[in-house]
Image 1 (tube, rainbow, N blue to C red):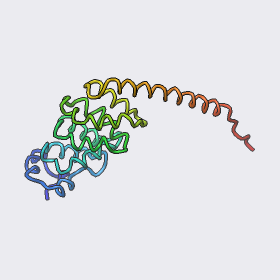
Image 2: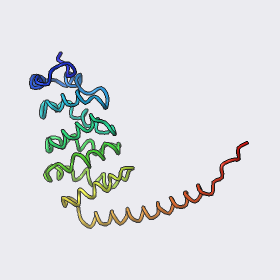
Image 3: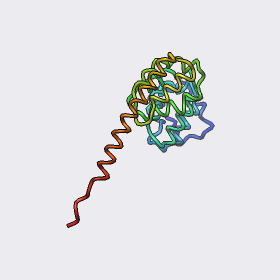
Image 4: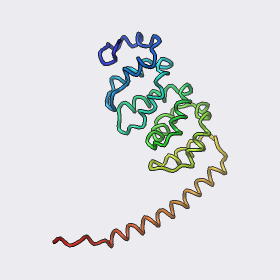
Length: 186
């Protein structure tokens, strides 16, 4: 079998001749820094990589990874044909995966492709996380007018109220920490 790690770059066209999932998996990256393998997969292009597109989406969850960056750039270019697997990524619980989709992929897509994700974006907009993906979703929905404006404004008002409450709690915890006296050294 032809290996991405040993084959010359100019043979990429030969790899795409109806490779099955098992063959494609064999040349997928082995770690987040395996950029050569990621480029070999990406160079095959769409639709040759369809059997491993879900695997490529899973790589997007890896922070600070050249492989994830390469695959994100691929999905940003592919656009509409990737709607299904990107929708699945938006439904996952991994906040870094969602963040990469919302900030590195969807900004490059045409509105027609994003429109197909409006339900997933609306759902994700109601689930806050550490990367503020809910707000990124609201911004995308508003930018492309894909959700009811009143609902979006009401959601932002609700978020502001919650942040006020959270800020009060943060100040209270900070005051408690400032009063904390470490035990005297013995």
